Image 1 (tube, rainbow, N blue to C red):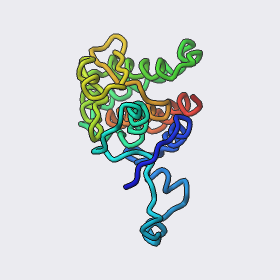
Image 2 (image 1 turned 90 degrees about the vertical axis):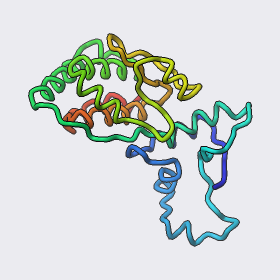
Image 3 (image 1 turned 60 degrees about the vertical axis):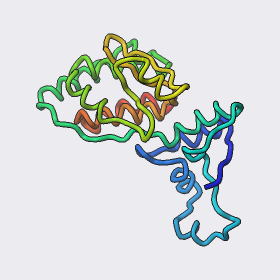
Amino acid sequence: MKIIEVDEELYQYIASQTQSIGESASDILRRLLNLSSSTLLSRQPDEAPVAAVPPKEAAPTAGQNEKVASSSQVEEEPIKVITKKQPEEAIEKVVGKVRQLLASEDFLQESKAVVRFLELLKVLYRTNPESFAQATESLQGRTRVYFARDEATLLAAGNHTKPKQIPDTPYWVITNTNSGRKMLMLEGAMQSMHLPQDLIDEVRSFFIAN
């Protein structure tokens, strides 16, 4: 695998094209460039494709730390595991509270994706703590922790995680991700909590333009 450096603007564009949890930078670029596996195999050895992110074992130099930290976000998608389904009345209660938040004046006027992200996580937890706990425990990256009950755990998982506490909850979450990545984390949690797809799509509309 080859290593290339990309500037922040290009990285943000690649990350914004993510269509599913677990899609790597190579997968994204292959899709955007319409490159099939057969196309890649037909290349000569000196025409081998390059990756937009370095392999995990590569040790960055001091001047490359920030670029590596940003690029690693493309590959480090949360891996979702569907958890035990809650009673229908519990699910409906969460659905109602989330829709109430989405319709609130404060939420509609909020321009910062990170604030919306934290407020949605707050509602998910406070409406059904048990289901939220199962969902966050089921979300994990290959090497990164996304949710924890203390800041130190997230800081130990990376130098650039920017952990913030979810308001009025015992949980902390990483926030060094763009709007699209925050939505992927929300989607993973909401799917694990067995919330309906139409609600997830409503939530997505508040992140795709940020």
